[in-house]
Length: 334
Image (tube, rainbow, N blue to C red; front, top):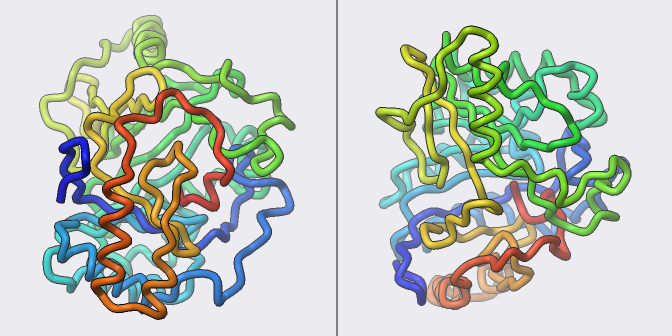
């Protein structure tokens, strides 16, 4: 399946819910979003059908996101159903990790391939500042649980924000002794400030740290600590994303850099996004959406397929440095 620019599209990101047990300041306001009603979000059966149709068009990989996908009732059963769909080769999930100690084993048995765990700071006070309600030890326990049950790879996603003053070397060192793959993601001002709460902490475009600069910062701090510099990784972890991977010599994991703003990877884009309320979003940075919920509820598989193909044809060549969208990240799907 190719879009109008010749890119192969074989990856589908699906938001299971707009709800979350965190209130991260770059994602949603402190009192949460105006939550969708049960009738507004896609049912698990509709999601399974959607993936089945998408697989018939060439989708091979599926990532389940949110909000926080693990707060969606029945998520383990959905994973098991999706992994049995012909053509689907990998099912993964992005999570804040809090519920993994209770759910990781069941998810692994259901067929979940791997997990990405969001973690923006290793400082407990800053963690609470960013998440508003979270505890650092809970997410760290989730990382431990993911490793213990054998997810491979386990990736840690850290959004980099200049004014947050994160200890990037300590993050990178997580990859040394355990098979963790730390990925630094440039802060993206998605959504208006009212919906995300970003204005409350003064975050904006000035807080984007270009990945090349960040690599230099880490290597300078490593040199002062008597450590070798990061070098391009010989092997990168399994995945479908645009990260550029490095490693410390002899490390068990890697350090990746994802650069949506400083180094566009739009030419390599391979994905479509589905929001929790059943809209196909061809590009994260675009507000162009296609309603697939109506086709799922009142149409045939051919109707569902037509919506996916319409969205495919509408994928832009790149995001053209657009910043800010009508929807927040929690509504779009992380």
